[in-house]
Length: 220
Image 1 (spheres, rainbow, N blue to C red):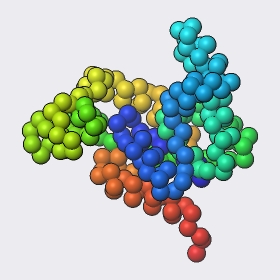
Image 2: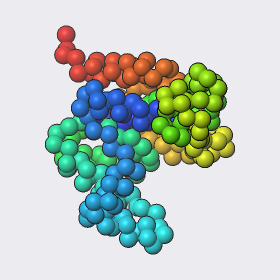
Image 3: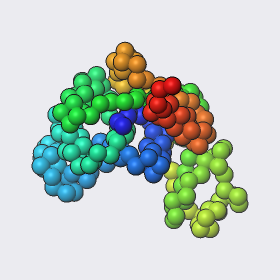
């Protein structure tokens, strides 16, 4: 099974992809992670990408497609979860070709639907323990004792510099402008499903599982 998880930054795609890996043996394909791995390993695609980046240029769609193809070839039949790709109609078309060349089909496109204002609050309020990495939130998950990590007792915390309202809203606007328009392409195939991305993490996992299990259920 090959699926795409769609949603703006902070919608929880990475969390749900990790759970699908653990529960169903699927493999998360995140272009950022794959690029870093290819660069480190010095693969043919990684060498090309390194040259482009060292020249101060952006990695092209062609290189990203080659990167995904390289990774798909190493999956040994495992299902793929595309997280953060495709982002544009051109990338969606390229993905169709990559899958077809390997005898694969795209089975589901699952969008994590979110409320923008609520998502801004979710992202801008999060922080982590600087020592052990435990995650917290100003409103939804405060420390039991103010200023003290519940796990390791550290009093040092940190926030990601890009977890601010302006940056979050800019990324969401980019998602709407570039990624959301690919949905009609997949809706025309009847493979799009939506889940409540603002629900509890476990509830989102259950919604996704219901979609995948329903699709695999034998016909009555």
